[in-house]
Image: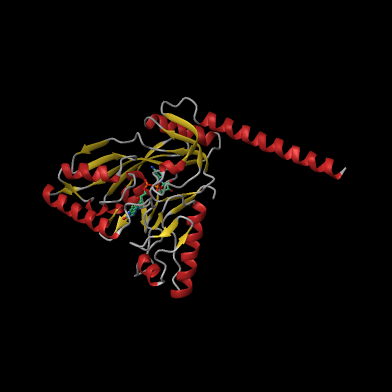
Amino acid sequence: MIGCAQSAVTRRSEEMKRQHRRFRAAGLHAATAGLKGDVRFDVPLSEYTSFRIGGPADALVEPADLEDLVRLVKQSHEQNVPVFVLGGTNLLVGDKGIRGVVVSLSRFRAIKEEPGSVLYAEAGVGMPTLIGHAIRRSLKGLEWAAGIPGTVGGCVVMNAGTKLGEMKDVVKAVRIVTPTGAVKECQGREIAFGYRRAKLPTGVVAGVWLQLAPGARSELEKTVKDYLRYRRETQPLTLPSAGCVFKNPPNDSAGRVVEASGLKGIRVGDAEVSTKHANFIVNRGNASAKDVLALIRKVQGEVRRKTGVKLELELKLVGQV
Ligand SMILES: Cc1cc2nc3c(=O)[nH]c(=O)nc-3n(C[C@H](O)[C@H](O)[C@H](O)COP(=O)(O)OP(=O)(O)OC[C@H]3O[C@@H](n4cnc5c(N)ncnc54)[C@H](O)[C@@H]3O)c2cc1C
């Protein structure tokens, strides 16, 4: 009798799971209906992250243009389907992936020049491309970002930066698609930028106006070349990573405290604290998000125990581990 009752409960719970999956699939199809861009289901995100780690997205969508993006965001909102925008270079995506819609702005690649040394870049433009464009037009202001691999949209959201500058120094205005599908422009001075964060209205960044200044092309080229050489010498650029893992503690550097704690080279599975730069974790082959997370916790624990410093994450954890 007990066995019968148990199997009835199991059957009911299996049926509920199936119903939930059908409900989720219907929501996803309604959220992505009628788009001109690319829509794919169950796509492994390891192919879209610089870490080469990450389980599947329920749906990966590459909207064709602004109209498509508006439609996608609005329909997803109406269907209660979560939307996550992925550039992919500062993320640890969980092994079980991301539920809902993951948006790649790979088709948002236009750069336009406007009077007064202003460039408008669509959010999917890669920083290296944008820097190259600015230099060819003899525009200065972005050299500090040489070697940052993210998209312009991701760099605004993260207020990406180095010791030499930050995104906040050049953002004139941002175009945002809100969850209800409205397209808004937000002035740079209205955005509260902090250390690797920006307080923006909720929504998807579709484009950014950058205030640059006239410069001498040859000088800009030399500066960028020097920064790139410095990066190659000091960072593990030949292995998959997500850039700096931890934020720098006040008046110190995260890399220095991790190294001083004797943690360079320690591993969990294929995840390793880089031997070249201690604030990078590199994927030595088949590291999982679980491995990286365990290594992060180990580093945080050891650093706290040995130096008293509490390291905060700079990279973002997303999805289910
Ligand atoms: C080798 C290497 C070196 C790096 N060096 C630096 C460095 O010197 N300085 C630095 O700051 N960073 C550095 N990074 C990290 C990374 O490139 C930056 O943080 C960058 O800003 C992330 O951009 P992304 O487009 O990849 O965004 P992601 O990492 O994919 O996303 C970051 C966050 O922004 C959100 N987001 C992305 N695009 C949009 C959008 N269009 N609209 C709304 N939300 C969006 C995402 O949802 C997520 O919450 C480095 C990374 C690597 C791999």
